[in-house]
Image (cartoon, rainbow, N blue to C red; front, side, top):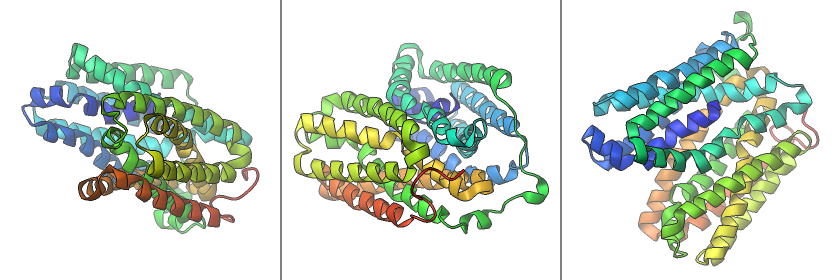
Amino acid sequence: MTGFICIATETLPAGLLPQMADGLGVSQSLAGQSVAAYAIGSLVAAIPLTLLTQTWSRRNVLLLTVLGFLAFNSLTAVSENYWLTLAARFLAGAAAGLAWSLLAGYARRMVEPHQQGRAMALAMVGTPIALSIGVPLGTWLGTAIGWRMAFGVMSAMTLLLIAWILIAVPNYPGQKSDSKVSLGRVAAMPGVRAVLSVVLFWMLAHNILYTYIAPFASRADMSERVDLVLLTFGMAALVGIWITGRVIDCALRASVLIALVAFSLIALLLMLLGTIPVILLLATAVWGVTFGGAATQLQTALADTAGEGADIALSMNVVVWNSAIAGGSILGGVLLDNGGAATFPPAVLVLALIAFCIAYAARTNGFPPGNRRH
């Protein structure tokens, strides 16, 4: 549920830009910067906040992040000032950056080592649910009762989450002060940079296509059915998470390599036949399956590789992941302006193949074969 709130809070303005623009007295392009402010908050704050709180008890850190969502979504709901709204969105993004660095490691500590991959798959399920159901639901809700009330509903959900955490979530100690792990030490661990490089290239490829799915879908005369394309992607992503949960603890390396090969083949198929509506939907379904388990696969590999530095490594993952989102948006925009949406599949293919080569080469550290090392 924390992951769901992270993603829903990030993407909610995307479906409510006209209402937010009118309510704040700005243009839609300026209202859209509320999404950018959130992403920048995550990017800037993830590593410093993780380092600052690594000795704190884990449940206190989790509660801090969720209280951040409560405070800053509530502030967004009542703000009449554009710059105050941007500041609230930036701080909500900072809370999300800390949350993403914490959630995977927390889920791993709740179970036996042989169940860690499956636990992470379950903990990450909030992301595709938010993307496939939460975003359109939030858009409908904002249209029906107003964009401010939509953010108010997010705050109400956060109150329920705080109660749930206090009742049900076990506490774990942070690291001892004399055993704190430095950022440089984690970055130098064998395999960490390889996994982060796979994150960068894989997510760059994904976000070029996902960010500009509307103009790409128009090539197949589906500009009026982008909602169907996104729903297909979201539902397929849930299937991908389920599959990943079943295989990740015994075949992490194989699942990553297969996902990247399948994504590369989808890019090739879209290059050749992407203007056919049925092909586009089928390709989107396979793409969704390959992406659905990506967060779990990559965070599991990163946490396994980093060991006691897992939380710091996962905060680095937040930075790389959000950089790839921004980079995909920028690179996709350049491609769209200079060559049209037809240039997306070749770029996706190249980036996915680079990610595959890095993952394949990281056999000793990063993506080792066989059962996960516990």
